[in-house]
Image (tube, rainbow, N blue to C red; front, side, top):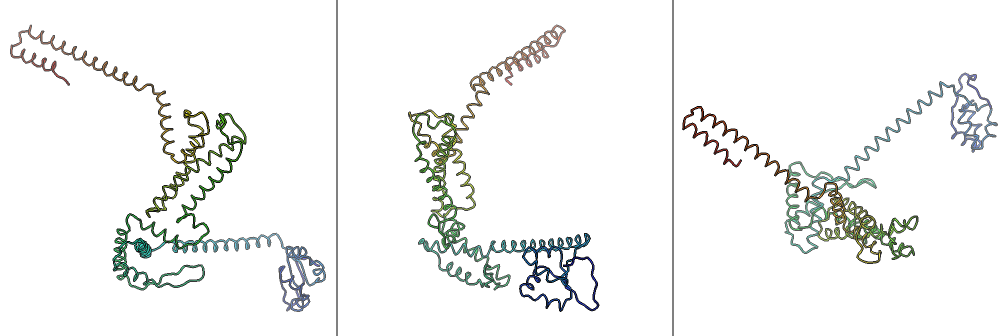
Length: 426
């Protein structure tokens, strides 16, 4: 087979340039001779040649000579080809990026509800909640809400796309409907108090969903927290079966153990703290859910308290010095669980320890108070002495003025002024 950068062109002939796919199809069907009757010469690149040989068509390539010619590109032609390929690749990337942005914007628009849709959904959920709870709902509210629900004409989109609402009213009618919906929403909110519209809508949506773990709780947060509690409980039970977990003296002293034994005991305390932290989180959240006042925006705060509880349990069980009320040290897991249950208590304990350490730096508060009292007394005595010296100086001036023949009335005024300074309490 010939490799060349130049060839003799036959006048009036048409030449073909091919890649790997068409040639493989021609070799498989034994139709390469038919191609050469239309195209006297077929050109391929060196890369195409290597791919054909890798696929096992070396004998067919030899048989196709001299009609099959391998053209080796010059360096300039290779650079031009790379530029074209790069520009096409960049163009495809830009098209894909634009498409992703459009899909994200469309998804955000689908996820976000309009005010009208939000009012209808929350009002419908509150009406169902009130009716199923035996609360009295006025007839006009139910009738108007049902009418608003049927005003939504939906257009079914392709599979995977949500239905879109078709406008059925003009702008003035839309404003009137919004006002009416807002009034209905406000009345229903007062009827279902202390339950919150957001919580009722959340429970209504979750109640219509199906899932394997729905039995664990009515909302996703409760299900995730129960799973965390179950994991801590299972690990707590499994680790407790180990002979390393015992009630021997100093069994839980982290400074007298090392290696895997210490790691297992610390993990046991960690599970105990996790049990306490998950218990208090579930207990608090269950009260809000039972009253339909649970707000999903505070879900992150529950996980923060759960993490703080685990940390507090470990600190209380391993680091904070607590006097032993019993001979056994087996109360350490209990301390870890209590710390997980109430991180606030551990925080106050640490805060008190910090104040105690700070008192050693600042000194005894009673001694500080006595020192401040002495400073005040010394300053008062100094001010009194200055006042006495000033009064004595003024008396001496009056005495000198009497010797110079001062009138009696002026002398009385001077003495009166001195008496006023003497009796001044400022």
